[in-house]
Amino acid sequence: MIDTTAIHYGTAAVYAVSAIVLTGLTLRKEKAARRYCYPFLGLIGLATVMAAAWGAGIGFVSVGSGVLRLPQLVTDYPTYVLLFGFSVYVSGAGRRYIGGVVGLLLAVRISYDLVAVFDGIIATVANLGIIAFYLVAIVLMYGPIAKKASNQPPRKELLYAKTRNLVVFIFAMLVVWSQLEVTGVLDLFTLTATLQYTNIIYRVGFAALVVQNVGALVDNDGETIPETPTSSGQVTADD
Image 1 (spheres, rainbow, N blue to C red):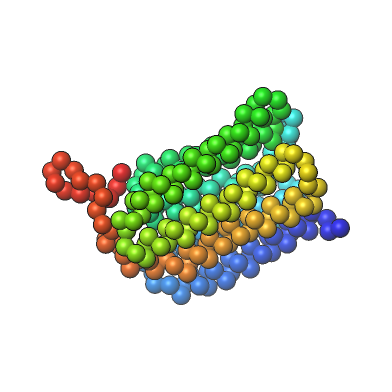
Image 2 (image 1 turned 90 degrees about the vertical axis):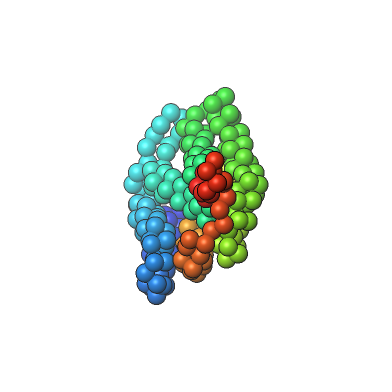
């Protein structure tokens, strides 16, 4: 059986190649569109370094009854903030919804960390929190945020639907993975392989989707249908 170290180094190699390819594609876009792509390229670059560090066994810290994997933390937190935050941003729903969804996903990640380092009632409550916070985020993204997105130009609304569906589906896989890890039904090799495979789809797949469809953000700048009337009769798209 392949050692798990090889999985992490292989993951780093996939990230590195993906970063090169996506950078090339980004540079072919018009200048105004590139600024939307750069954060995702940076995220893949960070993931490359952290996957290599994970393979080298760097950044493992014993806390409580478990171990925190710092390379995983360093990449997961900005990934959740950027991917979910960007998707809600595309919808035009405004800062309150962006902050709400990002906050829920960070609560999911914190809950996972609590499960990793604590036992007993704290771990049980935190594990339930992983599922509960995620479900609330889904309700928001398919409910009021989707309604806000319907006020956007068609291409922008479609981009929201694409990014939302991708992050929701892949994150659901991560939630299932977390429950499999807790139950211990899978061996370490299988857990590692499935986690890194999912992470690659999450980060590289989302970045590729943005690079491919970034024109929707540039073409429609300033064309968003106003959403919220003010007392003076003017309108604003920001909540």
